[in-house]
Structures are given as C-alpha cells and as structure tokens.
Length: 102
Image (cartoon, rainbow, N blue to C red; front, side):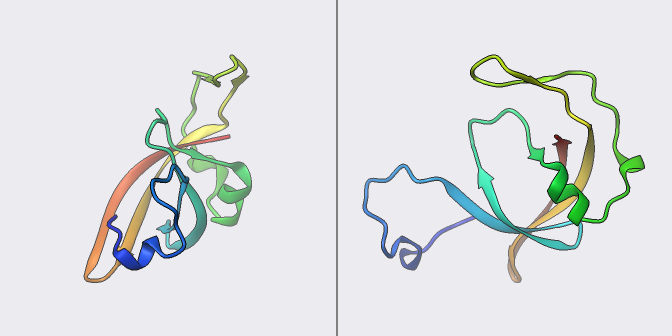
C-alpha cells in the first residue's frame, strides 16, 4: 500500500493516527479494516465472517487462546485462509492470509 500527497489532506504532521483501509476478502469488499503492524495475528470478528457467507465447517480448529495486554483470554472459534486483494488494477496485490475468527 502506498500513499500520495493527496492522502495527507487534512492530516496534521507528525501524526500517530490509525491506518484503516478497505480490502477485497473472499470476493467481498470489507471496509474499516484496522492495520496494526504490532499485532501478532490477523483477526476476523464473527459478525464480519457471517457477512462473508462462508460456511462454519470451513474453519480449522484452534486450541491456543488469544491473550490481550491486560491478560484477558479469548478462545478463537477457528481459523480460515482467505484471499485478500489490496489496491486497484494495475497497482494491485493479492495474498492468502490466515485469520483467527473470534
């Protein structure tokens, strides 16, 4: 992903704003995706998973819980590999990503 000068319109520099993007996932447009470069996993919430119309039997079991900064634990419902497309042609990339569903 690259940004041009036009993308800085209205941004006061230096900034520490979150990066939120729109991507194609499993042939659907998914908006308001938070990019967290410090995260150790890619998370897909159940509500978004349901809207992608993917059958739950495609989830792979996950036995390891996620642990937050405060020590709270969440057990994922499973993991799934999805094709993710960023950008628009001709400046486009496609990658396979593994998401934990919570």
